[in-house]
Image 1: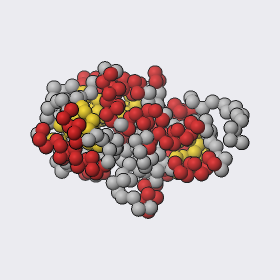
Image 2: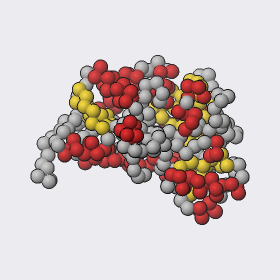
Image 3: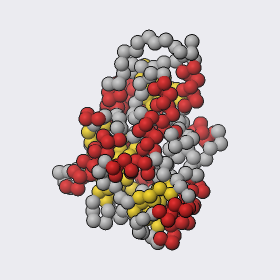
Length: 337
């Protein structure tokens, strides 16, 4: 197949004047190189397209592909991860990973938890604070965990995210509201074990590939899987593969993860984060339907490596799942012609 690659290259945004924090979720050259090389080894012809604006230019020039391998995070707005999927839908071009609805929904952690709660998927108490006055609507007591409602890669998460007194909650929310200019998710703090589960496939064909426990080492920021810990994981974090046969809790974790994946309608591959409450019961935290794909540093490839799935095999399975949505293209009239 002819496969286009869409992505946000971190170095391009840094050169344009964006900050390290603003570009934290974007990909490095080695990630694009690894995906491109894997696709070519699998027999595909690749075309590096780039970000949303570069995609618009290519589409306007008449370029088309059998499939687009999309890992673009987007820069602006709550629907930024949905921008390229929406463009490709408009042109009838299939692509990897989830559709615009899922991308927009899951980027908003509060909306996602509402869906989980309504679907009966266990998730801890939470509230969304859009204005300081909303804090009065937080109906549960401390300790709390606060973070931006629509960021990834641990942005906005630090030891200060744990708020142990009610009187400290307004200031914690104010700082996040001012810094990230978006609502704040206030959750009941979960003090237990933390896990991330990898899923490959879509709908009934989706399956759990593996689960790893996130263990913070002595020099890490404790009790939080923060941006600092993620960026320096080699020295601060130990990832331990856990399996249902060895730990009965893992069976519950993987069942919750797979239920959440299917309820949300996520596609192809991704990962879900869960953490246990004070009674040891796993709770859904969030889902990443556009998981990082750095072959050595990203959680999804790390889990695959722990269970013996090579990076090339992971890419092949993502393409195979997306390929089921590739239909023979029929000539259609251009309404703008």
